[in-house]
Amino acid sequence: MRGKRRENSPLVAIIAISTYIPPMHYLTALLVSLGTLFAAFERMPSSPLQMGMGFSTLGSQNNPTAMVTHPASMSLLKTPSVQLFYSDSYHLSELDFSGAAVAVPLSFTVIGATAATFGSLLYRETSLSLAAAREIGNNLSVGMSVTSHELTIKNYGSTRTFALTVSADYEIAADLRWALLYRNVNSPRIGTSEELLPQVVTSGILFSPSEQLTASLEVEKDLLFTPRFKFGGGWSPIPGLRFAAGFATNPSQATAAIQITFKGQKISYAVATHPALPVSQMVALQFHLP
Image 1 (spheres, rainbow, N blue to C red):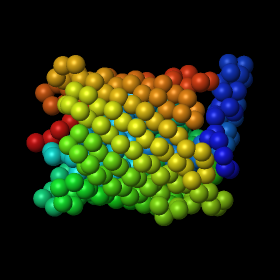
Image 2 (cartoon, rainbow, N blue to C red; image 1 turned 90 degrees about the horizontal axis):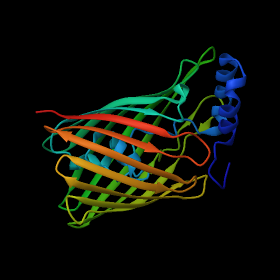
Image 3 (cartoon, rainbow, N blue to C red; image 1 turned 120 degrees about the horizontal axis):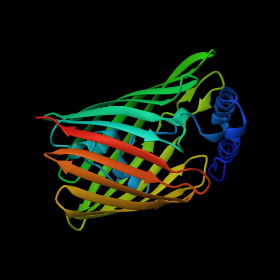
């Protein structure tokens, strides 16, 4: 399928009629529709601040969950970090997405691991990732992640594939960074139908004129769809409190987030609208280890 990104219209119809059909029939219809609504393993681990800044890949680099899509960003972590996240999409438990990530700086590199699961007992995607990043000189960071994706459909069995993602992060100036990401660069396929996982190239800039203000601009291009533009900003009025807001196109979505830091530990929450579906939410806890 090429051209405009899928607008989730089958899911809109399913939600609209869900109160008029038995629950199991609803789940079956939802399962059948997933294949047309989304590509397999389209959802990647992220943080609420990233979601709040218009689903920005660059919007919250100091968290370990970014390692799957932007592994080079791990080089900014200076202490071991753990993050737990949970995402509720459109108030449907069948679309729940949750996971955990850990990143550990070493003398020569930063390594990390992530585990995430999406779906329900009927349809489930499970991903396990390993990532590494390191600085090259004073301005450039590079990273790579390897992910094992397993797709399980009840009564039909499971299948697995491996995906490779690479990224680079370059500091143009003290307040300006540029990043380039290529997700699923090895063209992984899954299942007997040999479905191609989304290959996504993202380029963007992150502007941080001060510790209190951050702005991001990204262009995300799935090789089979038209580009998606993402805009976001973050503001910290006082130490320990941060707000974020953003907007993404194709489809048009407004987003917002809040993060509270207490004794070095962070709790954050984000919400995103959709032009035809209920809101989506995400919550996360991040711990910095000694």
